[in-house]
Image (cartoon, rainbow, N blue to C red; front, top):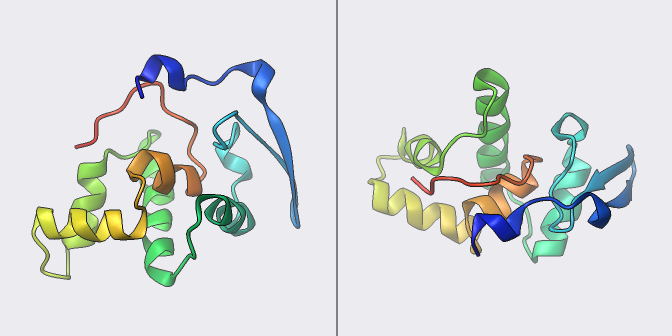
Length: 126
């Protein structure tokens, strides 16, 4: 999919009622306000994506959220691969295998969405 067709359209927003309160998502299920992210949102979105979240999923999600909070932008995939490889002795290729085992449809499509990031207009896959 090209980034041009991945932009949020204001007429396609919807509300999801979660235990902690309602949140608004775009037509692809990305939060429109990342500050409203909760684990309830991650769990809900994971179910929509066919993913059963494990502690390892949450390590990646928490890393993405912390990096965004520290730097003001969603981290590129290459930083997540370094995070996954660090301490586990994994090569970049092995870390990528782990990332795609956790989020089979990709970093932006699933990991970033579950982490509550806004849908990017364009991105680098690292």
